[in-house]
Amino acid sequence: MPSTKPPAGRTRDRMLLSAVTLLRERGVNGVTLDAVLAHSGAPRGSIYHHFPGGREQLVTEAAELGTSFIAAMIDQAGADAELALDRFVGFWKDSLVESDFRAGCPIVALVVDGHGQPELDALASAAFTRWGEGLTSMLLQRGMAPDEANRLASATISAIEGAVILSRVQRSIEPLDHVAELLRHRLTAVAP
Image (cartoon, rainbow, N blue to C red):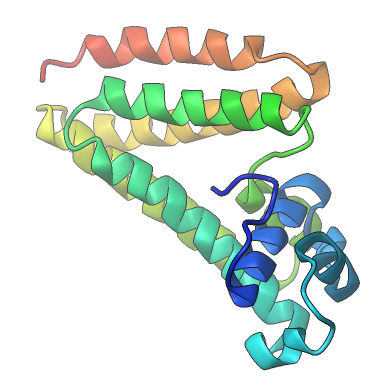
């Protein structure tokens, strides 16, 4: 996921990255059109020019960008589960420290703020499914049985997402360190 500061350049990209940041820091309810404009520095008329679906389109595209970012991190690790874990945990540590522990997962924000809204629930479900399938595939390549690979993928996502939440509350990366240590132990027990 992108930095908390929108880059100079294309207005649409700046607005979308601002929407991701706001989703991560303030949740779904914090992604207002005014907040996106203020954060991105985009002119007022650019919202409906670049996002004709307005706020709903911004939230959807921000969630999809966050989903794709994490999925790419998993996919780029190939069958190297330890590398994927290190990248995933390292990303969250850097994000938390850089944002002064304000930025969490945009997909968790969908679940917390958007629960009961079918379109947001569907986005969150699709994100977690996509990440789980990527991790499961990685574990299968390492020779793990399918049921065990599914369970470990689910546990990995759950543990890291929970650690991100605890890290925000405790203002410490220690929960991520603990989860990484436990997961690394489990992953190294799986023959590559």
